[in-house]
Length: 558
Picture 1 (spheres, rainbow, N blue to C red):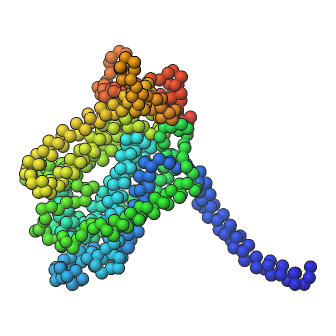
Picture 2: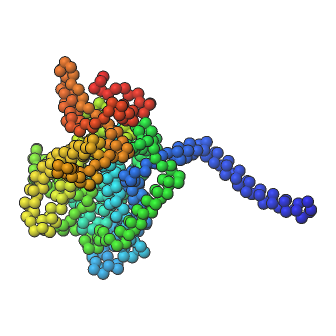
Picture 3: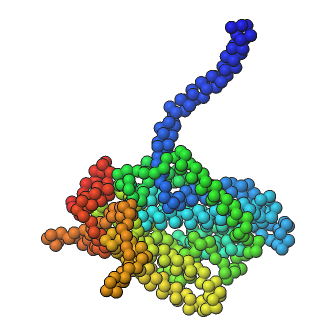
């Protein structure tokens, strides 16, 4: 090799030294960090996780990504919003309110809408994102409830989800109360009445929260701290814990070939789930941006600044707290005077007792159903709602109950729009609040049993082809063909608990009698399927719990 070639080789080696040093430094830094943080184990576990491929499991991601849009837009709005309730005179670009006395909070909201570049767009994206976030969390909870995904070992994750839903309601209320416009001020006046209705401590809480007699000066700054700091921080922590438990406990899946109660089937994180999830985030962001650009929401400049002595007749809160307004309007006037103290039951019961019972029921329902069934096994297969008619009917009845309360929150608008008496409409809704959930329960349960009967007919007679055949003697009959093996598998593989048996001696404690009665009410009604003994053994094997299950037999056998 000549001198020229030798010099080129030397220069190449010298040029490669910085790259080698950089690689060595990166490897050393990663090793040092991995010794202190479980990076390799965490990344390996995440890459090995199988993600579900059914569309219904995307509802949780819809809530997560709408919350991410909320955080991004809310950070931008925080830079310009002033939560002070001190009065000022407005001289901004909105000429209609020029010279009007208002709070700094309302004036800064107008400045964001009309003077900050892109402020109105970000404000409306933020508001639409909040509505989508609360709706997605609520629908996700309904999906988990109707499919039985709250059962062991996911009870804690269910309780985290219920807590997230409650925090989402509180976060939304705090957010739309900040602008201090006429609509949000009316909502805060309602909140003031709710706090005042708490027996014994209501007046003290009122002075503490509002920092004096209503309207006070301290609530909006405190709501601002809750809205941008405390509640989002708790939500982020609970979301992280929720996702960690999803990775550890694995997801549920629908019953079909290859899916059992002992395995986890899904798509790998890279590239299928990553691409699908990224596309979903882009679509959610795009839809919310389009809504913020073309669909006006919360035009605070039309409402005007809040005045404690003024209120509009059609003031309605956002839909997720509309059930509280409906409870206030439908509750008959009822109060009690005791030793100089007035207890306003017509405010206290619908706005504090009713939501408290609602969330308490949601928290305890997984343990209640386990107590009724005596089932302590793990469940990783989703229930078809038709196969659990009582649970499905209870869920639909609760949704109908909420819908009636929501209609009650807008009884004045409905009465004005349809030219009916608001008093007559209120009484109709009061009756519906009691009758409609009962009718919805019975109708849903009968519909679930009818769908079970249709599944039995598919197994025994096959599916209708639409062809009609006329026999020699003139009789007409519809043509049928057998269903596919996959469809038959989806119908047959199901877990149908039996009611708890009564003791042979007939002597039971009062609590046990109640438990047996509830178990019969839950699982007495179902349509049996034509299953051969061999198929029954195969179904039991598919629905059996994981091999690590050591909980033993159900309570009824102990």
